[in-house]
Image (cartoon, rainbow, N blue to C red; front, side, top):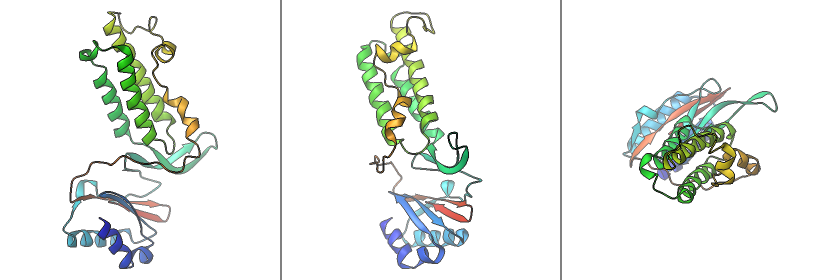
Length: 228
């Protein structure tokens, strides 16, 4: 992929189409001011010469702000600021990644884990939640945090009911406040404010199929972008 990025600049495509590449491992975005179809065709030809394969299921032309696209776990597209009451182009954690962490929480709180000590279980959940939030800390994260936080509370309460033979849903014995104050479950929405001003994050290495390149193209007003 490094050869592709260097070749793209050396051949003058970046200046010709104002087509700037943003990449991580085998995934990348090419942001274009114009001529997205030509950029896509050139990309295909260069990838072929490098004996790589374009992942056609993830390769598309995407127009912003009318459309959205996912890249490295984030959804890029039109967002709305309640505070400023205006639309803007930004990022949110993708639905797939929110669903994935919720499924992981469900797996950790199944009936087959009721023999665990509550402290051990909560420590595991907290590591998962904090690690997930440390990655998904850019853009509008509050809604995603709230959804994950709510799911974690529901699953922990259900797990405690199963462990102590308490009829569900168990709101009286295990109220929301006690899940945090007594059992120590973290609250992701309360961490949002501390993320302001964060400029750089180190991302964990994403898994990818060797030699397989995925791509998308998007348009922001007069700006077109291509994701690989």
